[in-house]
Length: 520
Image 1 (spheres, helix red, strand yellow):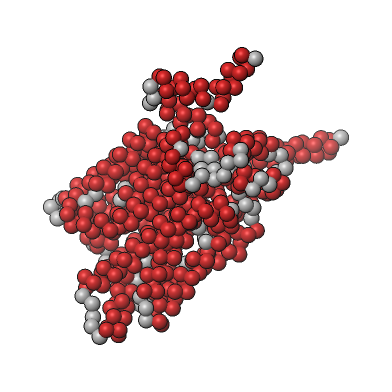
Image 2: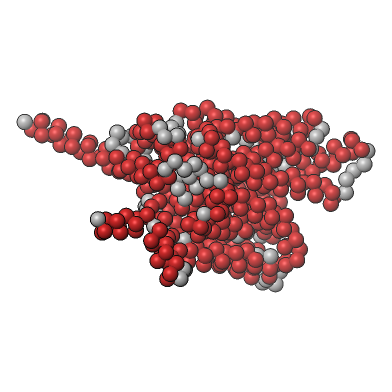
């Protein structure tokens, strides 16, 4: 009898533990899906931004030597710099092209299929980079950077979409934010790979530029074993059985009635509608506020100066007295800093919420931009300023990683329905890459024109971003798409005259249903 009671108690405790795990939503399949998609996705974005810094001198020398062999004359330093600037900047143009391809690829091939197909650009890029020196063609490096940019542009849009549609509601932010964690991890690993002792030497730089094929190969081998987005399977393809199987694997349980009901409601709301095009999304007045929010947030993320702070890092570390041959090791600390802050934010996002982290991140960045400007202005006049500048570099990167780096990518998945989401990600991605290209081209002129005050414009962007997010973005933590849309509709009506509010109420289907019930 006592043994039976003990056995019964053990079984009940196991049932409770399993129920807790199911409610938590974290499963091995979901975690492995995230890792498999991200290692060949946003990891590549961070990795390819990072690895291009180490071989700068070697590639510039290769460009000059190639021109001497072809035409018998060496280029001037300004011409070599111009070609190298184009090599670096063409990555952003490729990202812009990839953003425009991401939507159609995600619709036709599915979220998982688009990520797998995206590796074609990566492998061609790796072959071009690997063969560039033996072929004596720096143009192959340019084309390789363009193609790897296309790869990054597609993955930066499709991966958060895939994560947002595969995660349970209460973990949507944490799962989607893992894209930022893998971006930061990619930056860190790129800095490590670029060390002189690893692949950063003159003899190995083609292998460094081609090393991005390894994460892509890992994704190509592992991702096919994991399920497609359940929402894509049911809403886009209309395959309820496949959706049920995907949910069963991702949730590790056979009971997911509420989630299936929510997806069915979204499908019923979409009706027979197809996915929206860019122009249809721009023309939809009911989504204008959401679209404006995403566009501003995506632009602010690239215009806030986080990428530019890396430009100053080596100079600041040198001024702080760090030996030149040791600066490459200290620079790894910046990547580790962003990775650490992204991991911490991933743990906080479902507690603190999106708006708090996003607005708070911009506010902290604005404050550190002011301190950084003061430190640069007093450098050489007040002792210790280089050390304060070094603190500002790490603090600025930490603040960026704690909010804007990850929360921005979640917004299109949470603010738009299945029919509008691919086009929304195309627009958000295009804004990010276009602004990244513009800031990369304009930053040298900003430095030359403003000198130690070069971070004042970035401070203005951060202040504007903080105010806009605080006023325009409702909190989306733990809320369904219907609840978020309702909140935006309330905000839209507040800005309209009373007669237009009444007109919208009469044409709102829910209001018409209430009127018909009353009259019946």
